[in-house]
Length: 268
Image (cartoon, rainbow, N blue to C red; front, side, top):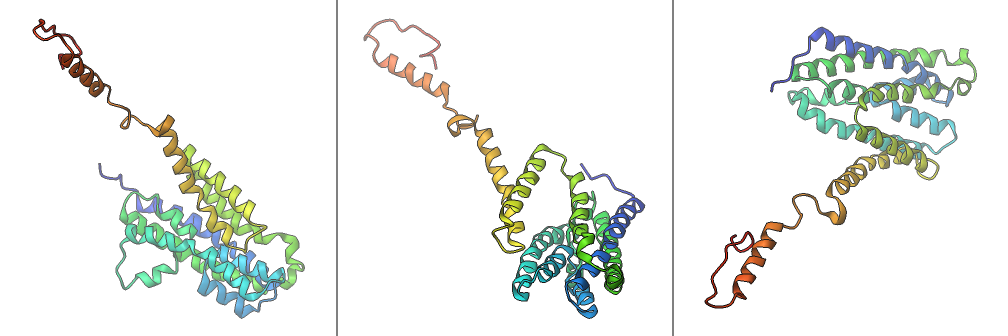
């Protein structure tokens, strides 16, 4: 059955809603980055070239806490690895021309993926990806600039808790997508893994290991469906085959010359 087409206007409306809502949170990054000691040029360069909010917040957060710059950069890198997995799925869904792919790769982030994947057609997916990516990129960079310029007026940026804006927006995007029990259980287990590993591993690594929640839940579901002793319907012993063997053995042990009685067992 062909997927039901979605009006272009509806796709654009959804994409703009996500792009504007998340793009405005670039202000929080600009303020946080300036408060951690980065210059205006460094702050704007991060948003222009890196353009993945979680990694950017992880980097400036580690620097603000007095961490080593190389360690902070490594943590931000590991956190950004997830975008590579997004790209594998989106490359098949969007099927963009080769010349456009390097440019589109810059926009492969949480928000564009969240808008693109649910679209019913390739046309809708391309519109959703493009509008979300363009809106978010422009607004994120503009608000980063404004935030960095206005950081001094805010005083102690840590007291405002602005670094929580990015994760909060991401959770708001994710929550409506968790429709089944399996998805909710997987998300809950991922949260437990990430929070449990956060105090003992470098920034970014707990998020990557939290992805193990998905295969773990699928494995447990598979064992549950298999039933006791790992036997499902397909692996259950063939009772009819056992009855057939019993019938053959009874026929061999019958008295020679005795009349043969047809029964359900040896009639097979």
